[in-house]
Length: 127
Image (cartoon, rainbow, N blue to C red):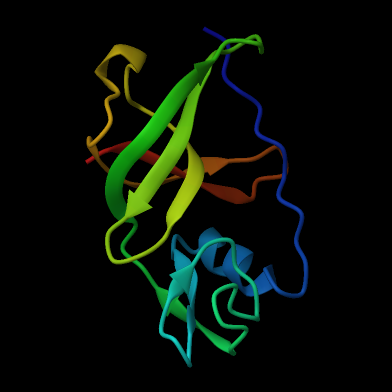
């Protein structure tokens, strides 16, 4: 089977620190200093209360909230929402899991997939 080609991330001043940490295998999320909510996608202003945010390392474990298999490319792939433990829900690819094993509520853990330019993209595998 052909391997999926993942586009390189768009790096902005708000996300640059995240992508640098990803290259080192570290998964960072933003946490609000006012309401203490953790959120995904990284942004400097809290989407819940507009407070300031700080970087916080996260282990990257969670459960599948929903998923689907995309068959429009040369290499089918699975993606879906993962509800992170003590954190937000994020959209990501699933890697290293057979499509017929995926199920809602399944435990998954962070994995890193390479993009076309060598950057690391967060994805999830069986956990």
